[in-house]
Length: 542
Ligand code: GLN
Image (cartoon, rainbow, N blue to C red; front, side, top):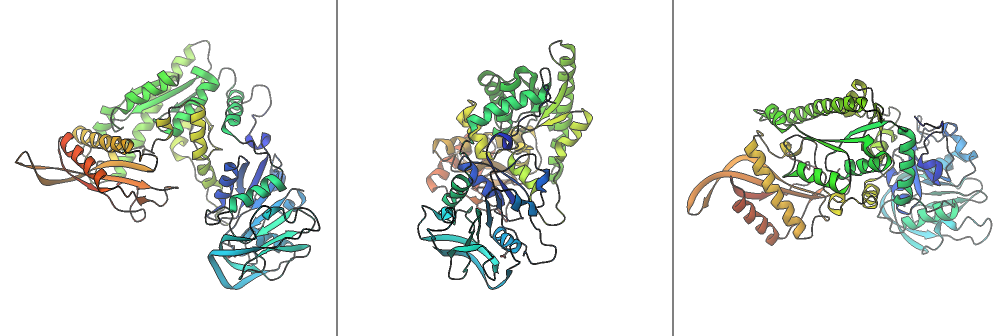
């Protein structure tokens, strides 16, 4: 642990932080994200958080929406200590109802549910305590907002005034007359509330007085200091890299913090993209100075995949388990070598590129029986090798990781790379994975991505790849009948990968890609484009 007895500094200890207490709304994480976009640091914790157990003090607290009704038996309630914290409060939807409930139990089921767009009339007070008008300051008197509720306040709680109404909600916005407490019935965090970000800024910056200093350049310095303290003078860290943005950014951060005491391992499983192992090696060692070992285990993986035809789950399991075996063997070698050298200690840590959405997923409030997701993949490694976990990106959203990557000098191409699945091209080769099938899938994929980049579409698309279908079709090439395979192209747009839509390429583009693949990739005589959205399709094909 920290060498000088101090605990490593966490962002909420040094950045002004707005605490979001999550009551289970599907939008809760967006509140945190919007605040971060305003350069205000924010963290989310479940609504059950006991405030006396917090080791830091927030600058303000936001109570999120949630699917429950405050008056129901068993409904979640905030720790009443939140009202003694002496910091501004904003309740959103369920959060508004929760504030009202605390101030007199005046919430009931409305006769009319309200979902979707609504028009808000702002009521300004221009008198009394100065904070009352702050929430809507600088905003128009009529605002378009997004509603999603069925309950309503029966009357105004004591000491509150109305600051906004809609035709259906007489208490669409309320404020306490003395304390900086606000409640709003609509959701400012969703893009359907066009001026929502300004409202959140009014709350965080003007009311809470949070400094807008959360930037990746500040985070970098602080995180490097934190890693150094955590790992100590001699500690060593090992971690797998994949060529993707998360593992590369995490690896570069480790390299900046502890240099060669960080050991990166790239396992070539034989189903990476075309020339991938070579490209990753070049970038990580030559450009980024990372201490990297590449293990070529392609024959081992392909040997194990031989004969696996109709069971995609088996492919995934074989690749996942073999990856852990290979990584562990390599880690032992590196650990033994490290133990023999005088300048370094043992390998004590395993680097993991966990991001904030994974953390949120594991802590978000899912009702009385909240389930906690475990990092099943690394669990075994941590135990077998007696390692501790280090997760330098666990406070960051994906867009922040990208910004951090740019700050750290990681090439643009890599920073904006599409995600690539762990089992790689193996799950894009439907049917048996053989060396020749890998060649076909790789070459076709490479042409597709090359053309997407040349057309300037790469960033517009969230994920794209070529898949090889396990069927043969008839074609005619050079006047000769051929009986060859079919490539399916897939390209999707999505913001969260939970739902996705296929990308509307123009016909000329598809024509160009199809012609190149059929001409250049031996064994392919047809190209099709997958026009299935998610759901019902998944992004990958297996
Ligand atoms: N369940 C509450 C209602 O229906 C709150 C809904 C919400 O927070 N989105 O009014």
